Amino acid sequence: MASAEIIPGIQVVRGKFASEFGFIASYLLIDENEVLVIDPGTAGDPGDRLERSIKNIGLNPKSDLLGIICTHGHPDHAAGASRLKKSTGAPVMIHKDDAELLQTPSIFLNERLMMDRAERFSMKFDKGPLRVNYRGMEADELIVNGQNISVGETTLKVIHTGGHSAGHCVFFDIKRKALFSGDELNNFPNDPRKFYVDNTGSIVAKLTAIETMSKLGADHVLPAHDSPHIFADAQLQFQEVKDGIVHLQDTLLTLLSARGDADIEQLVFDIKQARSVPIPQSYEALLTTTLHVTLIGLKEAGLVRELGNGIWTRVG
Ligand SMILES: [Zn+2]
Image 1 (cartoon, protein in one colour):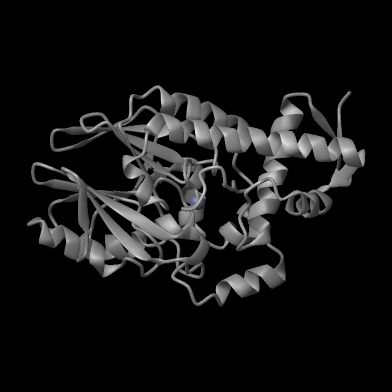
Image 2 (cartoon, rainbow, N blue to C red; image 1 turned 90 degrees about the horizontal axis):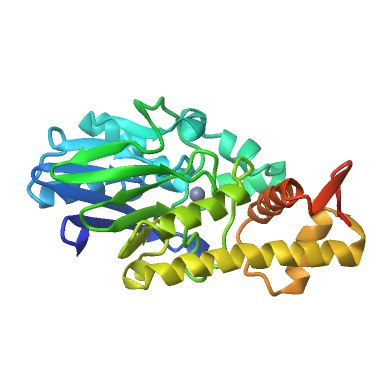
């Protein structure tokens, strides 16, 4: 089976199991005789199965596929775009702040995750489906906050969230009350409180985004990594994600108080030791950038300050 209908007019195409990241989901939104692909997946996975799924529902990938829209530019969501565009001709759409990632994929490890050489090396040779060494492409259309995209009778609203990465967007299907939440919610399949943001992300934007998303009246949340949550209570999911962020902020403040001052490496170590925060296990860089961006958010709130040389302390 290439795809499965989860809500009338919405199909999920699951990628291969990608360890901690679970099954990465691509979605097809179908109305009348038009289809939109939301997150084409990794470079090669689900690959051809996206086109096959479109054919299986009786549509033509070359003439009925309106576009390939990416929630953000990370390689598990957007790397499949160029391959699908090549075989279908459909335009690739992404927010301008993540378009650079689509164009130059190496930015992901080097700048967005600030990975060191050893970690970059291990990730490039990872045997899992999450390929990071692939050729980039230029976006065909830059999507903006508030934009409406029509698929048949369906209106899909673009909401720029910018929490998980600077250009992250979520898409709200007004007719089905379904929210395609990408990585802004349920970043990992096993715990909604566990998340990471890349170096361009923002904790302040993430909290604001949760507030915005919780007011949409969504009945279904369709995350990119966590399809079992589709029929869970949407409001509960927003609350859980928010709780996770607030708990991380509180824990960081407590650790900084205890230490007096500390750099990121120290805080990464302390957070792991504390064990009360659910953290990504697969790559240390995911935790490092998350802590960095969280500290910047706390700095904006006047709760911490940087002493120089990457040393942070509490204010007051
Ligand atoms: Zn992501």
